[in-house]
Structures are given as C-alpha cells and as structure tokens.
Amino acid sequence: MSSSEEWTHPGPDAVPATGAAPTAEQVIAGLKATDEGGSDLVQLLTPEGERVQHPDFAVDVTAEELRGLYRDMVLVRRVDREANALQRKGELGLWAPLLGQEAAQVGAGRAMRARDMAFPSYREHGVAWCRGVPPTDLLSMFRGTDQCGWDPVEHRFHPYTIVIGNQVLNATGYAMGQRFDGAVGDDGGEATMAFFGDGATSQGDVHEGFVWAAVYDAPVVFFCQNNQWAISEPTERQSRLPLYQRARGYGFPGIRVDGNDVLATLAVTRWALDQCRTGNGPVLIEAFTYRMDAHTTSDDPSRYRLSDELELWKLKDPIERVKVHLVKQQWADQEFFDHVELEAEELGARLREHCSSLEAPPAERIFSQVYAEGSPVVDAQRAEFLSYHAGFLGGER
Picture 1 (cartoon, helix red, strand yellow):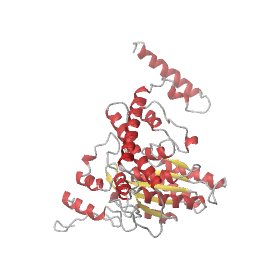
Picture 2: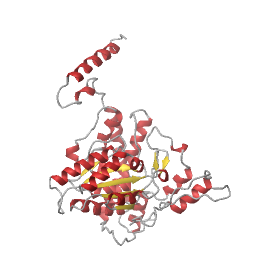
Picture 3: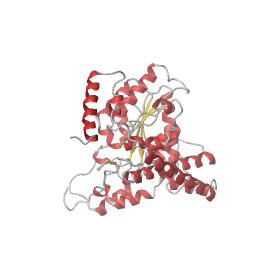
C-alpha cells in the first residue's frame, strides 16, 4: 500500500488490510461504518429502544418478562462492578469484568432449560446468575479460598475454566454423552452450551470440539461472545471471515446476533437449543458485542484501543435500550426502576460483607482434592509442605 492510498477499517466480511498503520481518525471512521455487525446480524431491539422484526426469529415477551430481563442485567452489572471494586481494594486476587456483555449472557442464560448444561470460561457471571448460582459463590474462587463455590450438578453450571478454550472440549464430550444416552430427539431433550470469547476461536481445543460435535451430531450450542478484543488483539487479526461463518467448514449452522440485544440473543439461543434438543446437531452463535472494561483487572486497555471506540459502543448499551423500550411502551414507571436500583444497592452490600468474611482455608486444603482416593506421592508432598510451612509460623527458616 502506498502512502497515498486510503486505509479503511476492514468490515466484518472483509480481508484485513495490510501496510501502513492507520491514523486514529481513519480507525474511528472505519468503526462508524462497520460496528453494526454486518447485514447478517439478527436484531430485535435497536440501540434506540425500538422493536424491529426479523423474518426468521421472533420472540413474544410480556411486560413482566421484559422487566425481568432488565432486572437481571442491572443486578448482574452491579455484581460485576462491585467485584471489580473489591479487587481494586485488594479483597480479590483478580476479576474478569463483563461490563457491556450483560445482554449476551442473560439472553443466552434465560434461553436454557433446567436440564441443560452450561460450560463457562471465566467471564460468565451473567450466565451463572441465570443458572441460580449465588453471586457470593463466585467471590471465593477469585479470592483464592475455593476452587469452585457452587455445586455444578445442582446448578447445571460447570466450574469456571481459565485455560482458554478448554471448556469447549469438555462441553462437547458432555454433549456426546447426552447423545449416546438418548437424551435428545424430541422437544423434551437436553442440550449443552459452551461459552467462549473471540480469542478462543484461535485455540486448537475449540476446533477439536467443533470437529467432534459435528461428527457425532452432539447437542451443543457453541456461544462465542465476540467482544472485539482478544485481550489486546482485535478480531480482524483472528479471522479473515466473520466468526459465525467458520461453522460452515465443519458442516453445521452459524449465526450472528446482536449481543447487546437481550431479546435477539434470547430468540436466537432458544432456536439453537431447540435444534440441538431435537437431534439436529451443533450450532455456532456469534454474539456481536463489546467489552467495555479491561480484559481482567490486570489489563490496561488504554494501551491498545482508543477511547473514541469505547464512546461509540456506549451508545449501544444493552441495559439502556431495554429501559428506553420499557418507558416507551409504558411497561415500567419510575417506581420500578427505583426498586431495581435499591435491589442493586442491597446486593452490593451483601457482596462486600460476604467477601470480607471469607476465611483463608488451611494449608493442607490444596492437597485434599487432588485425587478421589489417597496417593502416597501426594501424601509425601503434603507432609513436606506442611513441615516447611510450620517453620515459617514458628519463626524458623
């Protein structure tokens, strides 16, 4: 590319441009032209709070149901903001913010049925909320006092997975088991959902999961939250094609939904889960959304993205569009919004109190759940470590 050629930000269906680095003005101009997600994006509620129709996906929600989705997102956001603040105060070791992704997670989580199984990565706090996991149970893991604060079988919600993409293999294996056990084939069947980010689509585990799910018609929905940044790498450096189109190479459907639209996400995910439950094999959903905060609390997003980009996405806030629609339809008044805010304040207070009351586990805890049965090797390691640890407690080195 010569210096006289104009650089444009590649659209979702374009091959990334190469050559001279763009100026900030060129990046923002490109973003304004392409941040809608392309013509294939499924959307039912615009950023301005207007309901629109889609020829293939429709969802009928009552005023009560939409108020419930709004409440879910507000409380999930408060959990996220409170935990983020607790980490900054030194109460948690780390936190993975979900700010901006509430609609993707709540829409997908509320589409699931009781017998469905979810396999999260490490950011699915909204899905955990929908599966009945108390937010307080998330804190012990990020504080380092427990490996998993909830019962995965009871909540049908697997422990968080830190290794990028590994949960996709776990989910595929679980879904294959559902298939082999005859838990699919009619409307009353089961399905599995695997949650991962756009960066994980470059991991081998994800592609292996796609292959096995396709070959065995596993009832698994691959739910990719494309929040535009794999830590510091933008999506266009991950793929030449929109991520949902990768499904074609494995022989199953892929669809892109507005991940900031809770109604569209709900409708698309319901459809995908029904496809799986009735024996039609896997589906890939790309929820086109945006990470408004850092990748984790150890990340500084100002080093790799522009503040103007963040401002553009603030106009697509998933909570505000639902609030505007509720007001326009006269489905909610100020008393309702005030009550939800009061609930959020009370939830934040409970989280702070719970976090400060968590006790550090005993030193031997790290060895207690390595194997189902005892192991001479682990026993020897435990004895050596506890002896070493006791020397510090006794003042000896």
